[in-house]
Image (cartoon, rainbow, N blue to C red):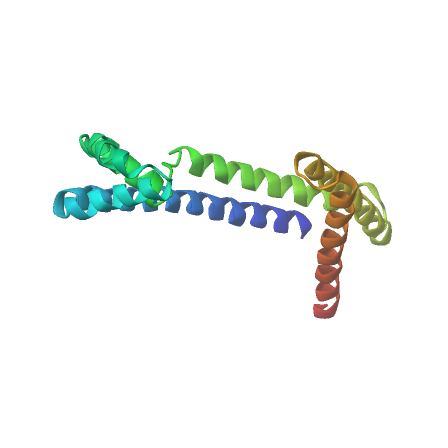
Length: 181
């Protein structure tokens, strides 16, 4: 049952990551098409938006007009500017969907196998459960410590925080499973 859950979870999470990345690509494409239409249909409005963006970055008023003219002289550059600075969108990597799916699914399998592995090495379910708890808490501590090394959080604080949150989540899941039967 545990292996089936890991497999099903990896597939579901991988597909979710794939769809999220595909949605980012589609959203970017639709917003780009809209910006391309707007610079043709309402160029004066789009020129004003470029000027507003430049002003928001503190560009001196005397420099706004020549910079706007330089940006708007090339339609590709103009649309690129609007995408990045008006909408805050960067073009997503087209390979991201597949990479995201594989990364998420692989991570789910690795993360799911950690607490499941002790059951393969112990004869009793009780011993397997105890081994699973120890392995899981140790893994949470290590991952939390590593996370702390890459962030501004103190590594041991991050480690114990990860153990606490992960431990509470595992305890809640165990309690729900026991209650259901």
